[in-house]
Each structure stands twice: as C-alpha cells, then as structure tokens.
Length: 249
Image 1 (cartoon, one colour):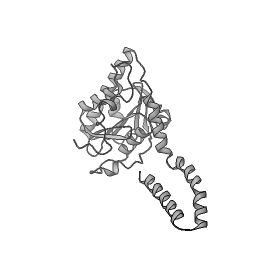
Image 2 (spheres, rainbow, N blue to C red):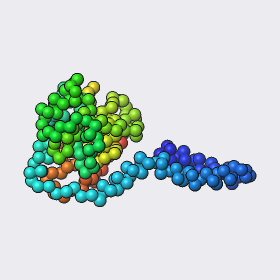
Image 3 (cartoon, rainbow, N blue to C red):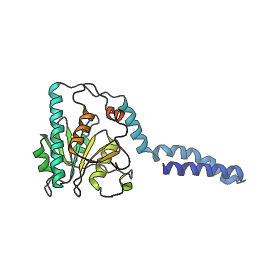
Image 4 (tube, helix red, strand yellow):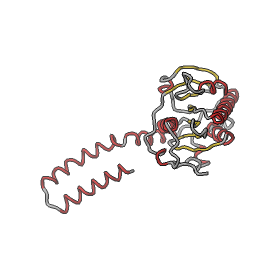
C-alpha cells in the first residue's frame, strides 16, 4: 500500500507540474514516461498480482470427495500432528509442520530429505529433536504421509511479524507465513523459545493455541467428514479467526 500511495503521489505531482507550469521539455518527458510507468506496474506488483490470481483460482475449486479409509487416515494424521505438537510445545522443541491441501508442494519437498513415511507422533518428535540432522527445516505432509523433512521454505516479506509486540518469532514463523502466502497449505509452528503453538494460512497467523483448539481448526480446514468441501469454508464460517495482526485473546 505504501508503494501504491507513492506511485499515485508521483503521478499527481507530474500532472500538477505539467498543467500549472509551462515546461515544454519536462511535459514531453512526462508524457513519454507514463506509458513506461504503466508497463512497469505488473512488474512492481508481480507478487501481489500472483497471490490475488491464486486466491481467485482457489475460490472456485471444490475439495474432492474421499472414501472412508482416506477420511480415517486424514483424522489419524491430524491427531498425530496435534499430539506431537503438544509434546513438542511442552518440551519447547521448535517445529514447523506443513500440511498440503490443493496446491502442489513438490518443489519445496525436493529441497529436503525424502521420507514417504506414515505420520506418527513418535516420528515427528524424533525429527524435531534438537541437534538431529532433520530438525532444522520443515516437514511436509502429503496425503497422510510425511513426504519430506528438513525442507527449505520461502520466507515471508510482508512485514506482518515485525509489527507484533513481542518480536519473539523468528525464521520458522517467517517460513510458515511465506509458504502460506505462496500456497493454500496449512503451517503449524512450535516456538523454540516459548513453546507457543501457532498456525499460518493465507498470509495470516493465529498464535497461542492449545492442542484442542489446534485440532478443531485443522479438522475444520480439512473437514474429513463433510464430503465435498470448499477450501475456504473455514474462512467463510469464521471470518475473524485469522488476523494479520497478532491475536490478543
């Protein structure tokens, strides 16, 4: 928004200068610069335009129906993630768990160690045990399987975390926001400093969750018992759940 306001002010200043002051050379330069400025807009706002188009594309996508066995596996996966997250939080072991939804995350999974293992609390606890080879990075879960561990994710450049009062969120939270800005994935984060549990989605973060609330949110996102389900159903039902600023509850 600051960049957009700056460009608007620049255009207004050019219009005022060319209309109020007789400057032929400057007027010619301004008239010939405006087309170039219009062509530069898609380049300057490329990330924002891409995110907007991705969200428009997801708005019309329907979550595919799944068989009962897949529903049961998804419930077990969510329960395993919540159980592991609660234990990691109690031990103050940092963790970053990404649950894939509709957008493919193979590009990020290739940056880590391939596993293709069943999701269990014990395996997640072992992966995120401090100073082990796989603890530094993200775990990506695809179709109720741990696709890869120690994955490298894009960091958020939105500056949301800089506006939080505590400033206790580091690279894990920035990576969680980054992957939520570039995909529709759900990111679960455990803070290594405080043990606080957070969840990120669509460029927003909700902090200080307890395990029960975390499980309710994940169940609402994936809705394993609801049949056909739009990915943004939770946002429509609970529009105030995620805040761009830190949740104060």
